[in-house]
Length: 381
Image (cartoon, rainbow, N blue to C red; front, side, top):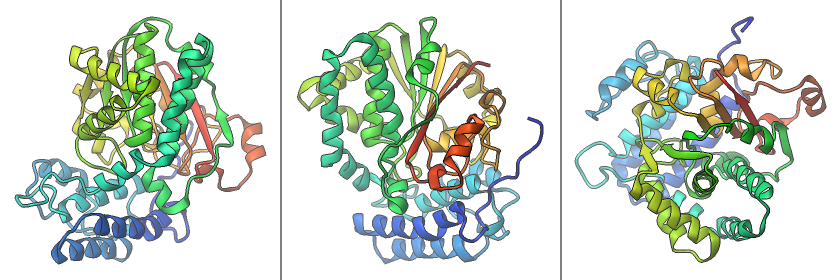
């Protein structure tokens, strides 16, 4: 890169990052509190966290969770400083780690290991909108091979639009189209069969679309082995965890038609080892992928292709900074250790790799953050 773009912080009043903390988080905490019968102590703790993160200074962790030491290191340098000065990526991650502690996720007691976002994820998975989307997979067997290729990629891209945290503040807009890339560009990476890694984002309908993509990769021989990476703990409201993978698979396998067959095949692929599930702690880290630990970097370097899903993973890939939108994607993502395909609906300010005429035509409107546009971008190390 020719220059280092400014890091996005949460302190600028009215900015997208500021609105996440001052508008989205209050709505989200209200839903968390109403979806599970937490007692007054938990509800008071959540209210204190909201007040601290919008008007106060960063407090240290006060729990004894297994990841306490790791998170204390990640928080070093920010504890005691005003939240408004903190980087957006770090602040969001620390907020959700503190939320888990506030609801008793890590401590002995009735709420230990209980996902505070599970009711919302379940409702999303069983919603009429998701049912309609899943039923669309019944058309896959009737399509040509080329049409199936395009359909599963489009489903994996636009499945990211149904992000619960995103819906809490904006609603879901109709898809206006891709600002970069195509399904043909995506498939051009798969020039040799080998292991494919998919770094998932959201649970529910998006995870179902990811499983359909995985099923297609195996069925067409483009992958001989798939590693599915999810979050080790609940994170960012709707992010997928191992429990969500099992829940979505059970839901799919119980449905009729092609989507049920996809669920059954994916279930068996996990049982046979053709698909493996991973939940590395770094996927909940408040740091970008340049800082990934050696064991994860080595594993991803072995991939023939890595598929990176969603907005948060994109921010961690290119850096959560005010890059010019025309910054080449290969420069921003060139540090990644394997051939890479990023599939993402735009729901935050960060974007790179766009052609200048596209940026000019889109102008200064809300297209970066309102979920109306998406992209497919690829690069090789």
